[in-house]
Structure formats: structure tokens, C-alpha cells
Length: 384
Ligand SMILES: [Zn+2]
Image (tube, rainbow, N blue to C red):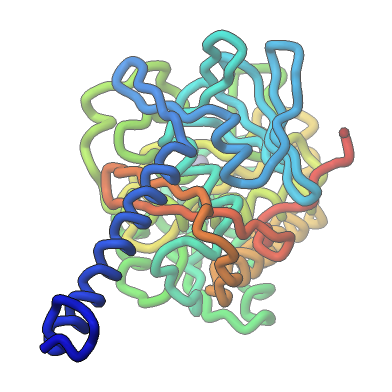
């Protein structure tokens, strides 16, 4: 019993060593976990969790540029996030996003809500981290309006005609790229909104792109904007405050990360193809995207109430470029969400962050941001 030179029987020594190792490992893990948690210092204000830009800079290996107290910039060689205090506009590599809630400033510190971190920043910066993205084999194209529902009108025609023309062009371009394509209507007929979403919901591995044109009483409203469904608890673009109906879940929210990634890819490609004002990626609860069980967006391809936009929309060249932007964006999305091998973990001091959103626990681990992962966005303009 003492032949091993210890007071423990040999038969018990090995399990004891294993237990000791396990306890030691657990202790180190707990200490590391505390350190990891300590990398983030969220604050709660008005029932919302906010994260500081310092913590985001640390997490994503970005440099926080000193601003004038009104604006901020988080910069790396391949990524630039810019915004202003009290504003809902965030620019990531010069693409405009409308935040769920305004940028908050306390003292000299800027904060974003954790919802904006989870629902915009994370899936846009690291689309390959989106959980369970489906392979895209079919694109369901939805020309807005139809039949007795003409949509907006202008001197050169009705919205329903322009949208059908765009999706016919996009369908041709997508088929050339190897996608299967389905249109929710192929002629001037009325199709209820819920039925349009249901068509996509019945097709496995599909994504949904609805095409519309805008109208406004504002004389300065022009350009392109792209919508995806508002996450749970987030007001639509046209509402200033959160209301009870913002907490009613809908199927489209199950794809929040895919939706914003798809919106980013298509919006960026369309704005670049057309060289038009970027009105931003926005949130709404339109029935046609609210009822989707697959990733989906709604593109507003210009204003039929603006003389300049109308002249462009009436030109086949503009419509071909818009269709081309949609096809390119679909390709960028498919490439960007493809899983890639994870880079090797270098040390145990990687900052990590767990946040419980309304649907799931999302754990994000940094740093592994590299230029290839920013497949959704163009490179940032060299402003610094
Ligand atoms: Zn419309």
C-alpha cells in the first residue's frame, strides 16, 4: 500500500490525480471565465443593455479613434464603423444602417445597445459566424403589387410594371449564375402578401427578395433603401417609440442574422451598381417579410415621386443595373455565410461575450476578423 511512496493506496492515486487535475482545470476555467466576462462592461439604461465602444474595439481588434465628442470611429485596416451621439445612423465601411436605438453617450463614453451589437454589427462583420445558415439554391423574387393594386404611379408608368420588369431581369441573371428562380407573380395579377411569403416558405433552401419603388411627399427623398423585418422589441423605422406590438414575435425574426446579412449584401451591391444615394438598411414589419420562414429582404429601388429618380427608373439601363445588383448581392450573401475553418485559438485570453437575446443565447468569440470575412461589404474609404 505504501510502495508508491505516498499515504494513498496506488489504486486510489490515479483517480485522485485525475480529480486534482479536473479541479485545477475547473479553477483555471472559472478564473478565465471571470477574466473573459471582465472584458465587457455592459450597462443597463431604460431597460436596455448597452455596450461601450471601448469594449467593442477590444473585442473586434479595432482602434477607437478620438472624436470631437459628437462622433466616433472604430477602425481597422479592413473595417470602419462610424456614428454620432444620439443618432440612429451607423456606417459600416460606408454602408448606412439604421440602428435599433440611438447611440448613447455618458461622460466621454459612447455606447450601442447590445441589440445593435447582436443584430447588426456581429452578423455584418462576421457573417460566417451566423448559426445554421442554409445553402441557397432557390431565389424567390417578388415583384411588388399587381392587378388592381398598381402601387405608386408616375408619368412613365405604375410601380407594379417596373417591379415585374426588374424581377424578370434579375431572374435571367440569377439563372445564368446557376440559381433556381421562382417569381411570386409572372404577370399583372394581384397576389396577397401572405401568399407571397408562403411561396418562399414552401421551398427549401430559398431566400426571398421583394422589389418595390418608393413615393414620398418630401421633395428631397431619393435613392435606394432596403428593409428587413424588425427584431423583437425594436420599433419599425417610421415609429419613434417602442410599443406593445413590437413585442409580438413573428416568423421572420427567426432569421434576424441572415436577414441583415442578406440586406447588407444586396443593398451594397445595388447602391454601388446604380451610384445612387444610400438611404440605409432599415427595419419594418411589412407582412411580406414578417411572415417569412426563410431569409428575406425588401428593396425599394428609388422614388417614383422624385423627378430625377423617375427618369432613371424609366430607363432600361437603370433597371438592368438594379437587377444586376440584386443578383450580385445574392451571390455575395451565399459566399459570405459559407462556413470556413475556424482560425486556430492562440491563447485562452480571447475575449468572449454571451448575450441572451429574445430567441437564443449567442456566444461570440474574438478575435478572428480577417479581410475574407467581410465578404458582404466593400473596403472602407481611407479617411484616416
Ligand atoms: Zn410598393
